[in-house]
Length: 432
Ligand code: DOR
Ligand code: ZN
Image (cartoon, rainbow, N blue to C red):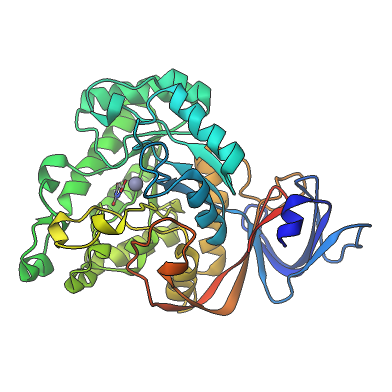
């Protein structure tokens, strides 16, 4: 298939089960791709001259999966990840587009940094890359970044992710400022003071383990604030990595009141709880932390009823030296691009907790809609970004074989059933 990546003529994907939530399609169809665009979707299509064929019999054919929350670490932390390695990890994990957070070095708080990331993506990227600009200069929470310049350069949202903008007046101004750009502010909702010095969720387990915990309220108070600020300003606020039952309830109530609030959840918060920290494996340490069983259940419920709009990995690569040793000293975050789809298929879809079509919707149509991105649908005229799944394959998680530069995952050694089978971007096969 690598030959195809270099020379992309027409491509016919035959006989796969097409699941496209955007058009309500679920059935066996052929899909024709020409010049980087989906040109026909129908029960049986003739094979055009010189077309390549993918026999997708028994496979699931979806719009390309979109991950709106990843850390590509370039510029500045290339020892953890680069645009080249991060997008290869994305392709291997079934993602055709990623949005990258601004906590690079230098911070993506001005148009020159956005230009740099986009230039890297054009020359070295395996999938589409949409940068997210910083809300505040240097992520310091003191003065607004060059928001207009960032929007002009192509940023699809604004976020200080990794840090919470604690100054509500400044955050209000950011929301008012970006309103005419039609893009959301993405909130890392974590009260700095309540979370300071903690490395896991506050509860019985943190007490047993002797680790300092952050209460669920550290998230809930900020989600409440951000919903109120969205109501005040009329802006769209998107809450990153929702992790508590309280936050799910607040977002549900906010939506019911007509506030423009949306939310995402990570695969790890959907399948793991604070119990995983009992191993003292620093690969169970992230911000926000793994929460209680009740929180996890509320997140699945929120995903099902649409309170939570999409799944995003928060792919946060770190070097081994930053993720070994004492738990409370380790860096926050885990890689996610190469495990997300298999984890979700095996742990949520296979046992019947989440219908496959809902999972696909939350990873295609819904993130595309949320950030106004191209793609997210599998119909004639759409960009030829596709993710093909094999629901039956046994998949062993082997961090040593990741395309990512980093291996910080709590899922190493897990055997999962179901995995991405092929990833196509603009009509080119980018994985396997
Ligand atoms: O665990 C995390 N790691 N959460 C964040 O919000 C930031 C991220 C990182 O950049 O490593
Ligand atoms: Zn993040």
